[in-house]
Image (tube, rainbow, N blue to C red; front, side, top):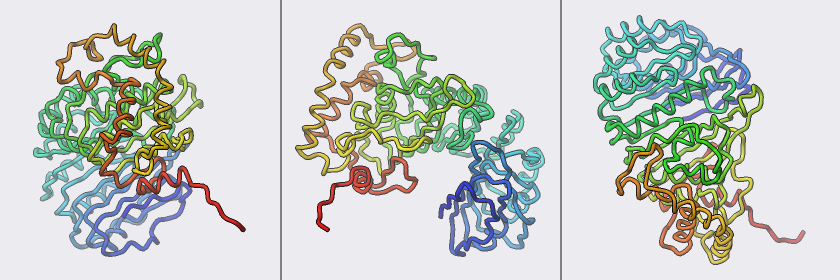
Length: 476
């Protein structure tokens, strides 16, 4: 069960009738100054509960606290195996009670704790004394980095782990090297920072987030530990994907903030969630869209679940000037490139700023379903592609002077470079559209759940019917 409580929630959440048969509960609560949650009540009401995740979604303009209601009252062991608390306050005594009565606990994550008086040194000492066999352990505090010696202790408490959670403020090159040492066979990796939907101008440490995204991108390109990575949830600076320097194609006079670290080595990814960052406020051209969609398709061909989210970003570092960048979802933007993900079952693309498909015509998106690949829409797409020819000629002229080099200027072998030769180009989109409309490529053959904004996924046919309703004819 997943519950997303509305932003104006300001009452205790103790009256909700949790069924006693629940084994998994995820709560996402919006911050409110009077909100409270009696943690022990849900544990008593749901004796079979194995997984509990509570996440506080802080408001854009305030930093209210989350309280815990009455003290914990537990008298027998719990079935709890996984506990995740994100962006909440915490009573250390209550946590101690939970740990004492949770001998089966395998996963403990305390992520970005707010204004916490938690004594992590004492907590780690307490955990060592308990008969727990933790497989995943994470601690982070919202307003201060975790000392290196405590991070070492956290690694020590989970000597055999395949999962890792990282807090942006804690990330350093040294930490990434230690990660390779302590978790040589990584299967799950998640980067955390301030919650989705908040303005970047109100993030406490925007520079740390930018640095963390870059560090993690480099790690994904260079570390042998990511070869077996299956689940990745991270932030990405969109220009880090530009391994071929295509930004200069659409903006010849521009200078990239820095060059791309290269190509991810995690070809076996099954789940990818991306928080797409744009600190330069430059994600306004269709080439950027083609780069993002094309990069994902090439580095993660085994994906089964993909989520791309665009948070708010500031404009020219002005305190209150914000916008929500959107990639281009029209045909020229290359969204069709994702159609090559033949194992993809769940896809969500959305923005903090609202609708991302408002400028799309039906032919831009309906290639997703068989009914959109009839002769009428094929001809519309053919005409659209034909209108790009002058732009395509310009690309060809620029390509004549381009060598086979990566974004950092080093030579790439043919096997690595080949798939990225057309990254960001209209040629890449044109070839994909032609393959779809000639039947040589069946896009998204496994796609079951699709969403362009709605948090509840629907069948692709239903999503497209809602976006482009058919006119009804009748007589009153």
